Image (cartoon, rainbow over all chains, first blue to last red; front, side, top):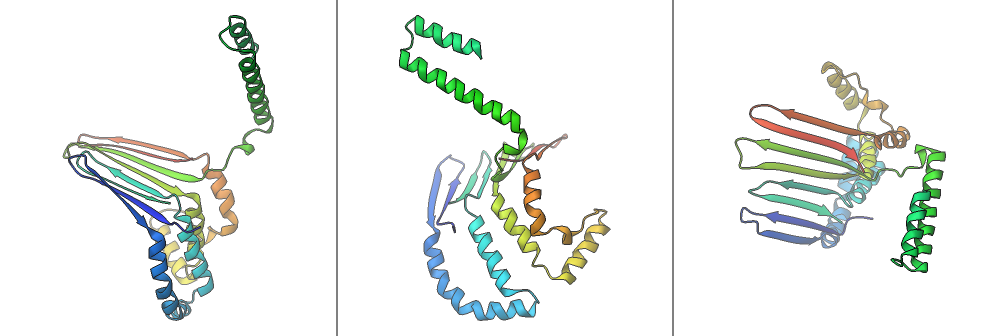
Length: 86
Length: 148
């Protein structure tokens, strides 16, 4: 399952946290037409690079799906950033 | 084991717990003991497969105003997909990468990473735990890598 939401938390020096819920589903919906338009070009690029285009798309999709529950946190007394993908 | 049971019965006799609670506790005790015995009998292969690779870095610099903590959780699925991505690398590029790795003195062949070997690799990762402590006059760094 592809990730639907990304939660980005930003904390400044004054310990004020801004939490952004980014609906990735909207991003995917916007990117689908673009992907359809660009797919012939990507197909040709894969062939030019001697890479199997179907395997490439399959692996790309798997990577997208695998981002589910990925988490990155960087904390410092002066600032903090956290990105969680759901 | 008998001691736990005796404690439950004692609590029952003292009126601290009801008969129903005592029964529940004893059944939970029995379930726990049967679970642990079956786990011992079948040894480690029954342990759950790790789902995430966790990387934690704690760094304390004298230059900054406090410690910096980095916490990264990588899903195992992403590692699987990454290995499959490595399988897409054209042979020429793979050869060049292998040569570069050998020049660095690392006896490793990227072409040996195949999806077929991946599950075995991930199974072995469950026992992986890397702890690195480095401290000098300027900074103190702790790195911890483990699976969960």
